[in-house]
Length: 298
Image (cartoon, rainbow, N blue to C red; front, side):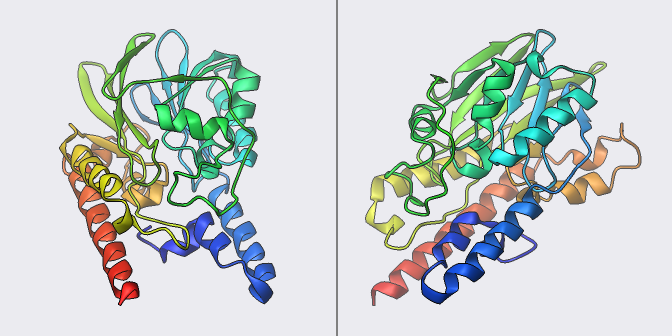
């Protein structure tokens, strides 16, 4: 995250500090971080048929397809109440949610999905590895962050979406882009939103942070590392007018929102270079992680 050290914003890092006498302090820090992530945030229209309905620190994106709502991410387990309230505040019903799409199957983005699926009856959509990890309640040994014990209610009923598959959700075409790295099942999603005759490329790019549990080294997994680099390149190449990310601060989303002159002012949100900049930052973070691994091995 750009505004504070990464461990402040990552539940996994906080969990990793929990050993011996530090456990109680780490638990308090984790509770504080969760509260910050789940801080209240009024829902608002991003552009056209696309709305922000998550808490302040974790994105949940709603798209009105004309034939039901598509919801991207369910955030923490305790976020589901706020997300549902936001959906109703916008004049929709929770039962209008027909599809729930996941970026990656960590607790802070998939933890609320089981309840949201139960309350809405929606179909959950994810990559093959993402579906596997959700069925495990987040506890996937293949995840670089496995071992942090940040689990959640399993989501056993998930439709697997193929890499590059375009889904026709109501009147909106949504394309899945497998972007493994942060997790094996990480997925970025793209669609087009229109207001009047102006249509924009919307990108919900998954987290690209190279973060690992103690004992995991990306350099020990060359195939995974190569896939991670391909993911970064894929995000950089996406047609990208408005970038959204699971952690809004990771892409400067709130800074752009703050520059709006009115709720309909989309200009500050548009940045054709945002996906390239986001990917470049991820590449630097990955390189720094690999350098730390090499230094630790000496």
